[in-house]
Length: 522
Image 1 (tube, one colour):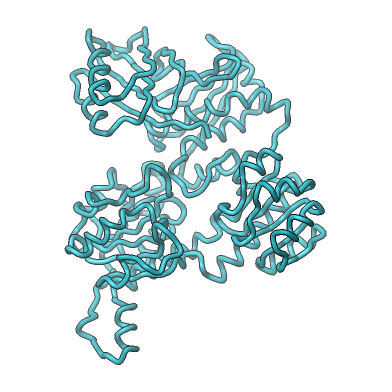
Image 2 (cartoon, one colour):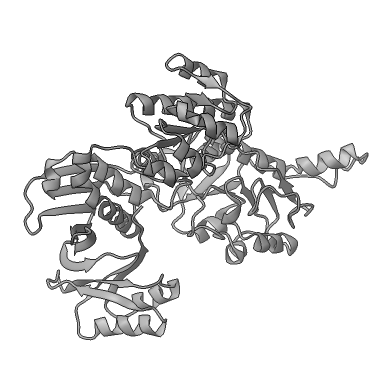
């Protein structure tokens, strides 16, 4: 095993007790490429680039360990093609990140940075830098994953009230932590004196906090961002601070890094730091120790809980389960977007699938449910722990008999159910039931599902609205059976549907519920 960047001594010791370990901190890229063929595992931090070219030269390599939370410096696709496990130290910086958010909150409330700069510059300006107490104030936590929950716990220790928004976290988790659950971001904005951002970076969250969001906040509100720079519209933030829409900000992350020039720098009421959220000795030590355990597990056949690519499975199991993994993930995505995550999830497998160990498919369902709600990759190894972190409960049942199809997967939460199978030689995912009503539709990246009263003209009304909005319908299916006069309709379209169009369809007479969901296959 090769360790080519400095990690915690405890991590080095842990690996050295189990494997032959070389610690080489001075090799350049050419030396590394020349010698990597001798090693079964490599441990890196951020400086070493594990490229496709390096992976090609690593003829014995079976695991890459990254002593940190990201894997931007590792070509995960190339490693996966070679069957190489890539793992990181996910969560190792959670405490440090949460504490830094609280530090920014307090520094912002008490003008610590500006008062310090003034005093060391020779000015005694007590009156100028009077602050506010946080006791009794309301903290809004936008994104209630592991770090958001830690921030909430620490804020409550400061006698703050906490309200949080995250549609991918079960209501029970809010209750357990004594945190009020906001139904919409606007509810949080209206209530909060401080707003701490802990959203994952994704296409859905980039620019999430925009000019409209700032307009819904109190003029005394102060925003804290120690998560990701791109979840805030920086221009809108600068404008909100400049015109007094909000009172202040504590910022640790930026749209582009590193940076020494930002329109935020020097603004009154703004505290900035250079992405220090994970920069504690404890977090760095923890990262080294965690990645050492992950690498050891990968080499000895243990459970790699922080893998960022698909784990190895037997060829026999993969022949049966593999074609259904995209379907399972997409059913999980549909269920989460339509039903939420508050009700326990029931997952059933029928037919040949019911004879197999289906934990891999259940992980796919859970990966779909939490995708887009967490920072970093969601995969078959970490999906179960990420779902558990969010209070999601699930159970699975297996039956070797399937009534209508050779194989069938059904996911259910309360009264919401979705069933699917695969079709064709390429195992294309197909929806076969929605809300316990038969419906036949091949799934695609953009899917709409409606519940509506079955009266003449409803299909045409949907088509007219989508056509007027230049949204092309690729396919459509209507349930032949009805439930108390209510029918289910599903469509696939060629592009994402604007929220205004969704609202227009939802306002049609007789339409009970309308959902449009953007799917991926992992």
